[in-house]
Length: 474
Image (cartoon, rainbow, N blue to C red; front, side):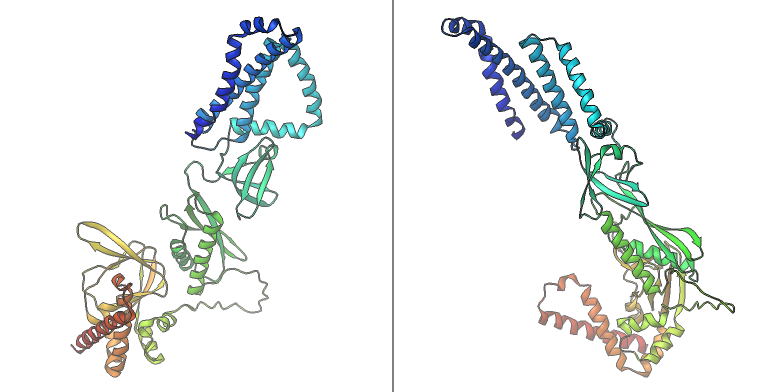
C-alpha cells in the first residue's frame, strides 16, 4: 500500500496537465480575447512541458514500484539513476522536438561537443562511471556479498553495501570502518566472491607446529579443537591437512565452513581460541623462530606432557585421593586408541570401568525407542565418563563413540578396589562427587530451592554410598 501511495502525486500532476490539454483549443479561444499573443504562447508551451515532465515522473515512479521494490536483491543505486536519467532525457528531447519544434539532431550534436570537453576534464570520473555500469551489467558480486581482493601483500575482505556512480561502498571485515573503492579500481583487480555460488564459504586457519611434535597426534588434537569451536558448520565438517614442511616446522591447515550471517572474523577467532586451547591442554608446541648451534646430537624430549597422571589429578572424582593413590591408578590405567566412528561403550551393555580422554573428541548418544539416537554431549581432553559402571556395576547409560581418532585411558574396578579397601573413607567422598554430578544432569532441579536441592543431594549421596559399598564388598 505504501508503494502505491508514491504514485498518487505523479498521477495528480498528470491529470492537472492532461485535463486542460484535452480542452486546449476551447481554452485558447476563450482566452484569446483577453490575453496577449505572448501569454497564449507561454500557456500552450507550459502545458506541453508539464505533460512531458509529469509523464516522465509517473513512469519513473511506476518502475520503482513494479521493478525496484519487488526484486529480492537490493538494486544498485547506479542502475536506478541511469534509468531515471534516460527517462527524463527522453522527456527533455521530446519537449525540444515536439513542444518547441527544435531539431533533435542539433541538440544531440551540441551535447556531444560539450561531452567531449567534459570528458577530457574528468577522465577518471568517466572511467569510474562506465566501470560502475559494467559492474552492473556483468556483476561479479551483489549488494550483501562478501568479496576479497589483494592490495599489495594484503588481502582485503569486505561486505558490499552499495554500488554508486563513482565508487562501491564496502564494509571491512573487522566491522569498524567503511571503504569507498573507485569502480575503475575494482574492475582492474581479481575479485573473489567469498560466498558464491554455494551460499557458504570455506576458510582456512594455518597453525605452524614445532618440528619435534608428533604430527599424527597434533592433527588429531587440532581436529578435535575445530569440531568443538562455536561458529563453523557441522556439515561439511572441518578437516585438517598438512600444508608445508620447512626448517621452522610443519604448517597445518584447518579448513572449516560457515554461513554469510556469521562474522568471518568472529568465527576465525573462535576456531583459533578452540584449537590453541586444545594444543595447550595436550602440551603441543607451535613453531617459533629460533637459531641453535649444535655441538652434539640433539636429544629431542618426546615426553607426553599432558599425561594420564596430570589428568587424573584434575578429575573431580579423584579429588579425595592422595598423590600416591593417583599415581598407582595412573600406572595401572590401560591406554586405548580408537579410530573415528568406533564405539567405546554401548548403552545398556554391562560395564565396570571408567574412561578419561587424553586426546581427541567423543560423542555421547542416548538411544530412544523408535527414534534416531540423540547426541547429548561431547567430551574432549580432560573429561571422563563411565563412573557409574565403575562404582556400582550399573549398565552403561549412554553410547559413547569417537568423533575423531581418540586416545583414552581405562580405569577398571580391579585398579580401584585395593585403594577403597585400604581407605574406606574415600568411598564417602566418591558418593558425594557422583551425587553432585548426577544432580547437575537433572534439569528438573533447576527451579528447586537450595533446601530442596540439598535434600535431593543427600538422598543421592546415601543411595550411591550404599551401592558402592555393596558393589565393592561383593
